[in-house]
Length: 115
Length: 116
Image (cartoon, rainbow over all chains, first blue to last red; front, side, top):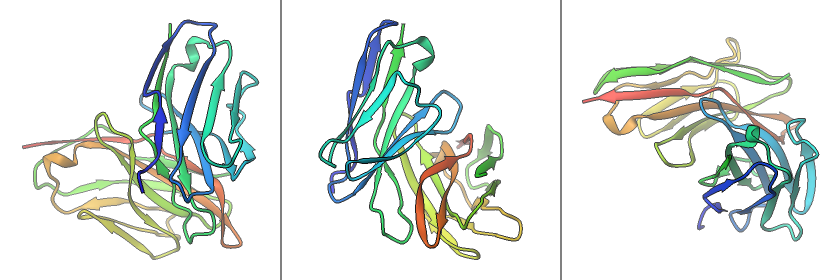
């Protein structure tokens, strides 16, 4: 169990550029989640996958955001035409659906700064 | 709907003091409750959890009891250490017919600073 990994850890971009983040979940976990955390706030849910199926999307996930999990393993989160308001920590978590509590384990996050 | 209300910080304590961080929730189903901790420069780590009413979660000297009658899950520790300085998040995951529904709902977090 190597834990959830995320890349890159930090990303600085200019407004209007596209960015893509990657998340590698714990290998046996079939659920993968994306959250966004801004300074002084708790994480806010964005979307989640069970295997390769995207089962739920938050209203926070505007049409500039897209997430994929093509083979049910790693996932990518893309933000198109970034805005300064997109600056935040993007967190990925994974869990094993069917376990008694479906506990989510988090990665270290990708900090996005939009200039 | 589902939501978590957490005691606002920051909380500043001396080493060996008693800690309580209040957390109350609203939920439409039968939630599982969690405390996560975020140490400086690190990701969220699960601290403890409880899956049903009257369950007590415990870890590293921290405890929290799932109180359905008061919809609360307060975090306590009898004697804090400097190394406990971190941000603590209360969270819930709703369930339906025993199966979890996916997302976590988080409180805003409570910053704890412990002085030697």
